[in-house]
Each structure stands twice: as C-alpha cells, then as structure tokens.
Length: 527
Image (cartoon, rainbow, N blue to C red; front, side):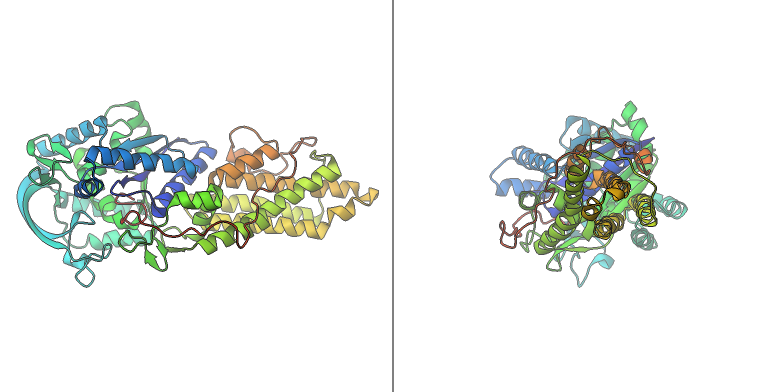
C-alpha cells in the first residue's frame, strides 16, 4: 500500500517559525508511523516562491527575487533536519519541472473553456493575496491580518470555479473523511451554501513579473493558487511518471486552518477541471498562540524553531508540540510549559523508568534479560495495560489524536514506575528464594520499555533510537509484530544506564524569546 502526505509549501517572504515547524513535525510523525505499519510512504514539503510579497521582501533585503528565494528556501531546507524531519522530496515553485507542469495544466484548463478573461472589482487582502467577501471580514478587516482590504479593479484571467460547486458539495457529503476534523468539513459546507465566485488566477506583467507566464497570454503571470497548489502533482511526476500513479491515489494534505478555503474549495475544483481524481484527505490544524495571540511578524511574537532545538533538544520540542495541541484546535505556547514537560514527562517519568530499569538489570542480572517465571496478578495487570496501550495508541494515531496517544503511553510509563516501587526489586534481590520473582519483574519491565520504544519511534526518533540501541533492538520497526508481549529473548545483553533526558535546572540555559519572523500563521500560506 502507498501513502502520500504533504506539508504546505511554505511562503518565503520570511524565515521558518514555530507554526511551520508544527505542521512539518506532524507530517513527519504520521509518515514514520505509516512506515511502521508497512506502508510505502512519500513525504513532500517545499517552498512557495512567487508573488508580490516575495518581491517586496527581496527589495527590502536589497536582493533580487531569485537571490532572496534561494536564501530563504535554503533556511527551510536546513531547519527541518534539526527537528528530525525527513522529507522524501523538497519542491520549489521555481523548479523548471514545476513551471512546465503548471503551464501544461493551465493550457489544458484554458482549452476546455474553464479559464476566461474579464474585469473584476473586489476587496483584496495583500496578506492573504486573495479577494475576500464581505462575510469573511470581521469589523471590516481581514480576520487573519487585522487590516482593511483594498478595493481593487483589474482585468485578469479567471477560473470557472463556480462550475464545479455542486460537484464539490456532493463529493464532501459522500466522503465525510475528506476534510478532518469534522468542524472544518462543516465550515466548508457552510461556505458552499452561498454561490461560489470564480477564481482570479493571474496578474498583468505590468504589475508583477515574478511568476510563471501564462502559456496562452505572455502579458500575464499565473498567480498564487494555480501555481502553488499544483506542487502536489508536479512533485510526484504528474502527468505520466510511475511515481504519480503510485502515490496520487493515496494523497493526503496537512495544513493550518488559515488556508482551509484554498485547499478545500479551490484545489478540488481545479483537480476536477484538469481531470484528476481528488486527493484522499485534508487534515486541518489550529494555530499556536503566544500570550493568547496568533504569531505575527507585525506583533513581534514569533518563535523560531532553531532556538527551541538549541535550548531543549529536538525530541523535547516534538513531544511538547504533539502533547500540548489537540489537533484541529488552537493551543498556547510557552517556554515554561515546555521546560516543565521536559523535566516532568521526559526526565522524571520516561528517563527515570529507563535508568532505574537499566541499573537494576545490570546489578541483579548481569545486564542480561532474565527468563521470567509465572506471572503474578500484578504482572498480568501490567502486561494487560501495556497491550491495551498499543491498541489505544494505534486508534489515536490513526485519528491524528497525538496528544491522546501520548497520554495513553505515559499512563503505562507511570504504571511501570509504580510497579517498581510496589515490587521493590532491591528487596527481592536480598532473598534467594525470590530469584524467580525478581527475574519476572525485570522481564516485565523491559517488555514495557520495548513497547514504549515502539510508540516513540515516530514521536521522538532520536531518543527512540538511543533506547533501541540500549535494549539491543535493531532494524526497522514492524508495528504489527512488535505490538505483542514476550518478544524479548532471555539472555539478551542490555546497555549501561544513561540519563536519557537530563533534568533542566531552574537557572539552566537562557529563556527562548519570541523574535521577528514570518507574518503568516502556523504553516504559512500553504500551511
């Protein structure tokens, strides 16, 4: 089976921020999880490099648009490995292959009569780079950028999006999983109750030259969505490469809610016009807020992921973001909460369980997994809880409920720590008659640790790899096989105790503060 998941392509008018990082981390986590299930996975990310705002940002930086986009695109490419994000392909909308695919699609849609030339007058938001309706405004302003849109009249090319409104409504209603969580599906259906306007897809070269020329009119460049959205096809070899036929039927997109409308309305109708089956699912997440305010360059409260990794490590950052946000809803970011999570959940709970277990195995069993005896009721309860955790984990991961998946894992970690206290292996070691009981307790602890490691492979890959090495586990993880009890072979040599997550002191390190970065909300224009 194939699985294709995309991040948005991030707009290069400024550097990566926490919102971009969250979107990309979630995508990476889901792809790692799908690989454990045996899927053939393709993860695509990249950068969106055309448009007015790029030209403005380049001018402000004293660079040409090409120099500027090369620089910022490289920053995104360099940031993701710091967070252990592994993409199969990084696309840029300035790639020649992408340009050719966009022009090919434009020609096809134009020749079948779905693109026409006309004059339009409407309320245009520079930040969104699209026309807004009166209904979308809040107190006369764009709800995302908090500025009044400008009345603009201009002759341009338009896509007959309204032609496909009824089809789109029918498709969404017949496929309830098409847009998740459900709140966003309902939002789109509510929007589609009103007549759908056609989509402006061009800008005259008299006003903008930094874009892909329309193949049927060199006096215009295509604008925003008929360029950016097509990356999801051009990156996998549309229209005739094997990669396209393998992965497009399994395509899923992950975005932030600010670009719900383009992905849930514009993109499916574009695909319908060009004769391509719609993507399988659209997953939509909320915003990260700092001091209850959405991150924004103008406000100056943007958090840079590079700073967080340097201060807390990639595993702690990934864990925190997945544990704190309920997918689909907004969440609050704070460095104090991040530090508390690292000290409590990672150092005290997980780290303590690992180090105590390794220490006891080294001291009481020469560092090797012992052969267990019959399980006591307490042993059976721990086993049952661990196996139930694996089933619950999979259910929540399939539903993008990452926080609930992690909660289930940490409940078992807590249970295992209490199991140590209750059984007191150090006391059992003093009694030769309790040798079999001690061996069973140690075996059960390491089976729990093995199962916990399986759940952490997608979430905290660096820490999971260290734990796998300590536990003598090698090779790729097969979730179906690994989610069983009793796979540890007695006699397996286990590594020396380590402090997997050293506790952060109250005065240790500097506090990460918000800086100046991208004005676009989490995940960027295509987030």
